[in-house]
Image (cartoon, rainbow, N blue to C red; front, side):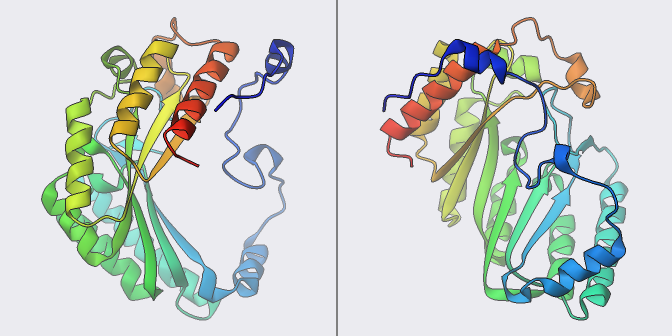
Length: 282
């Protein structure tokens, strides 16, 4: 695949740092004046049969230096227990506001690191949601996971309760880049957890990649993309690193002397699109 040519001046014009446009409206367009009455109206107007339920678990064993998620390093299991208790309280309030148990055709667990939860906490969290929500019989379940925390027992249980999709955070497979962002995980480890997920019956495996990280070059990123393609993921999320240390203090500890320029980031983006497309991804 040959990417279209974009003039350097146009790239430079729009080379700005800001929130990713993964939400609509974008965070920069949010306005004040929203209160509980608007929330109740939104709940009442939605088709209850087609809701997707999103559960955010903000806990990690350590905070990656490049992370821009709502997350925290957690060393106390009781903190997770209290969070699950508050999740249950929230679901009760949601049922009161909706006038019925929240219905859902899809369930997505994100973070943070949902598989940071211990086995018993995973069971409790799922039971809380299943008890207080009217989940569809053909529920589409997805979970994000840190490959470093994966166990066969964990994936077997997740698959047993209905999770069909799993997403592993890879970011980059170059050791130098991994040390810079504080997330060291070998290609062999990623290969193993992908194999285990498939052995346990997950029908869709997604791998997350990040371009624009310090010390990334076209050659190194190309090697990561090629290694990812060899793993034959069903889906790939490849998104740009956004350096905003003023709003994400954990990014301040990262050595950014090797941070790619805007033009270099675009070349890394082009490289990923071309190679994944040539490999058959749509």
